[in-house]
Image: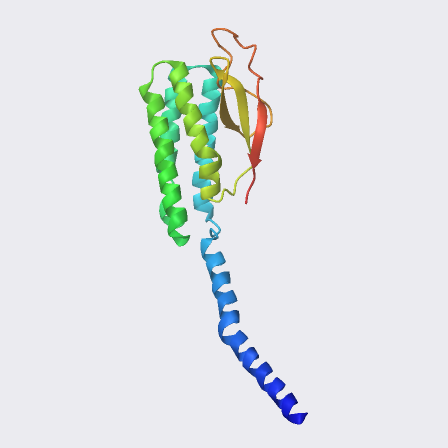
Length: 204
């Protein structure tokens, strides 16, 4: 009987050391992996740059509401300038996948913004603005771990040809449609408030 108890105790000791050496280490390694893929808190300077990009986007959206092509191009240039000032070097403290995703997303956003400036027809400009918006939300906001004010993703179900939907981003829940706007050739300003909120994002 005593011998059997000693055997059980010996097995328990062995199992304890196995847990300490392998299982506990594995759990620790997993925790480190989770920590590595979690974006770090941004500096105030970085967040200020992101807020300027968001403000420049909102100014551009408002120019589309007004249907003013000259103002659209001015606001597009300002948006590109603020985009270029993002200190992406700060993102190197996160994982390489986060850094690479942000760089790729910024390049895609910039490309669509530059395309707006190359257009002369406001409908084509709006199509580029739609593509730019789809790059901003959710890809850009989630990749940088957005820490700013609440933003709303809004949608017009008839942005193009009365049947093709398109999104835009707003800092207000009020609908001010940049695709149908105030000077639409068919609806004039009658569809200015056409649309709905599809999603929102707040500081993560």
